[in-house]
Image 1 (cartoon, helix red, strand yellow):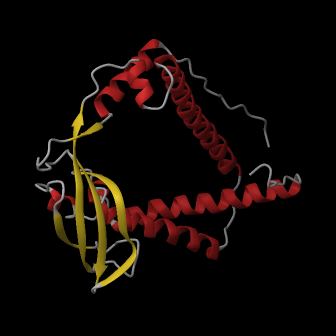
Image 2: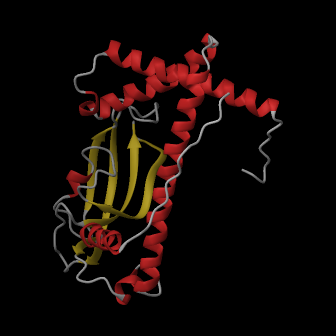
Length: 253
């Protein structure tokens, strides 16, 4: 091995970073307030709901909830669920009929029709943030705007340090990978590749735009190379740890 150096990056947070964070909060933060009595829910509103779901007339695990706040249009629930609550009022009892996606994580429910008995207990309207000040900070459970800014700085720094560490890790792995060429165990390669490939296929179904213009052959070639690299690096790191008696203790974890 030749000795080599890796550059580390450090961040200096400036006023512009805080200004951008404040703009994002103003744009994205949503505070919901109770609506006037009898006002129907529309997309962008939130509803407080209790619900019980059934498949083949039987309740299923995870299909029941009470006091759940659901923003209409957020796509938090099964496709088609939220749309059927548009127009609901506080006190409405609604039967929501949906079909679980074919690639749903729970295979026992995937592709099956379901009926949810939903009770809407309240309709909430979003209110915009007019100003970032101590009063707003207290709504978030923070004692003051100064404290909130301190937390924002810490978050920016933590995010950047995480990215900087990933960058340095990739540079290190690139260097290690360039030093070694050897055949890897096909069983280990197959396990790693199959795991990645199954995940890619699920992503392809839910977000096909990500893979637009890529053929199966091109994608397999790309992910086979990634799997080979990961297995090779795993073997090298494990052997390095063994030779140097590096052990990870429960305390380290």
